[in-house]
Image (cartoon, rainbow, N blue to C red; front, side):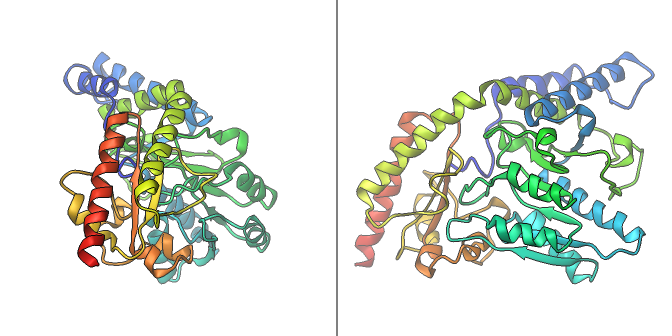
Length: 380
């Protein structure tokens, strides 16, 4: 039940990957023979499948190792270009962005290369669009807002944010890694400038992702090499991973709307089961506007690490983002939301996906309820 960290690979996706690894194993840049031609065709098909899912053109898709690399290319590539004109970029980000955005921008700010502006959220991790518009109106070179929060699941009004950014001619980068394949996104129609995604959040393989970008937005590469992907992201293309990403996107485009409704029903059932036996349980985030698979809870008075230690061999849930696991610090998302100390310390992220059964939901509820009741008894 940690689908926000990663999802199992759909068997249909795995079949396509296996075929690419064992039969159609050509290098997409080897244009002197048919094996290379077929690999190149497979990459182009995958670009179309990614583009179709997010409402973009295939020529806007650059394949990367995942959303972290995509975000770094988008942010650092923009900064590198602006520095050529001796402009010190002003970048605005929300306080609940993923560490790939926060830490990249913090490093650039520490180096004195950018001015960094933070946009705050409320106790449900919602943005104040008025503050966001004021920030854009004061003049910034890049706005970074995620499509959906990776901890509490709050969904952001990306279409409205893009409209505000456009009205002030501000490039808009959206980290959509938790949203793609779960909620509809229309990159071109909404006027996004750049969008990052990862395959392993939508039943594809780990280690592959994409940056979707407007070609009139100037970017400088972070790497140099063979000039692949128009020089923006050189290196031998990971054809099996790219094909897996493409197939995962194709399947989500077909099945997403039905799957997410069912996932939402399972989430609500789990929430009801937990609340029936743990009355002090708190639901974090925007309950009216969250990802269907997200259930972020707090049990005040019981440290989350204590619960995790008790259930970790039976139940896969987390205290927060997988990228921050093992870091001895409270969640920056919950801190930014201004939640009380007991709520922050008792926070658990449960995230559901399409392969969970009704019995899985029931068993998870039993395991978690028994653990909490036992800990409460021991602490009494």
